Length: 553
Image 1 (cartoon, rainbow, N blue to C red):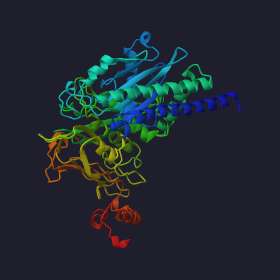
Image 2 (image 1 turned 90 degrees about the vertical axis):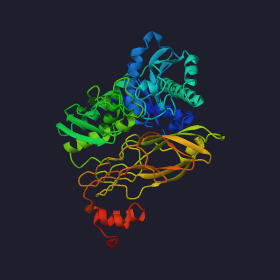
Image 3 (image 1 turned 180 degrees about the horizontal axis):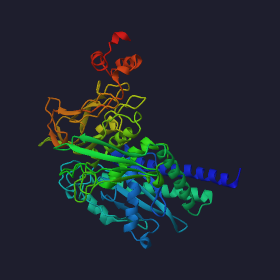
Image 4 (image 1 turned 30 degrees about the vertical axis):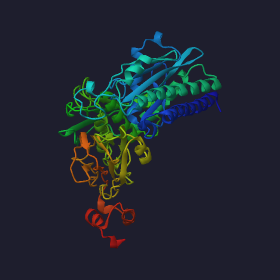
């Protein structure tokens, strides 16, 4: 074998080793985090960057909104912190929505990594915290100033010394200060572990920097991505999507242009900024539209600066997908999570028959602020839950049930949720019949019923969509079922905004199902038999949606 061949093998081994480094970095954050959103749901990201701030490798553990946005946010840190102020033992922080990952609840930390006194790169991580002050996690703010405390890019640690002034400011601005401060230390520890493992790897391999390794990774990642793009038809393809919005529907539009070395999504024609907190900073629009395109075109290529570069985005300033300061953006995920369905719908027009149907899209977050009824004793707590509807049916497979696509955020175990605050999850089960009919059936949503412990009441922030506009089927498949939210006495609740649930009442969430794919009459009897046996469908639904009698199978 030639020396070049041996060098390539060595580089590939070190690339794999680097991915192991960032995976351990992410797992450190999961093991040490205080917030259930990180510890139980994995709402985080971790990665390593070269000296220029280019993402070399990211942990598989994490969410696209964090990882892809973080790929851009590290450059903001390098622009604002002079090179002569970067010291060993430093750690920098921000939650700026326009320089981080889109809203104040995400804390991004960046730390330099030195070997023998020489800067070799940076580690970065992001985590969603349960509370950042202000109105709380919800859509009700009229500007970003109401949504919580803003932390500009600054030093959390300098030469190993924690900025105690920042800690004091944080403590007096949030409802659960120990939890937030604990998460800050967890994020710093996450980067420190990444740094230590990188130093071990470099010493073991005899490296003095990671520049050659980074160039090896970038060259192969970019070429592999371009090879996939070159298999697509050239041209421009359009798609649009209407979702619930807050008090009026939102219209999302894209024009996808495929060229030899680029796929560009232009969101001109999209609805303007909302007066409610469902607006999306451009960094988050880039993150999720790029993710949707990469999933569809080059899913097997590792995520880094080079593999993301061929996917570009533009959106007119002032539209809801390019909201500028001081627009409220707390629930930017509700709109942003719809972008993969939007761009994949355009891709389907370029190469029909390969894209999945639309799914539930945005996760159904539920933030509960529980307290004892006035005049009684009990627990106060802030509880955050992530819940998922069904994904759209794929070209050759059914949709996935209660699965968080595109966010990838896991659902917290019921036991962990109930331990966090004085609530009881009375019911959490799949929602039969909610998946759209098709040759491939849409994934099922779920039904969740939650109440407070005796002597307690709670406010909740609703963050739900696909209630007025269900996920659409594809290629003749039926739409998935709409979502719904109401109290157990039948009282209908709003899909967004803070609302009150009195003691003794429960809130019921019916999450939407994914759209079906293909002609329902082409679904096999064996598949329908499995649906019936698993209580995914009943006999009436089989007759009505599939024009089939269970007696046939």
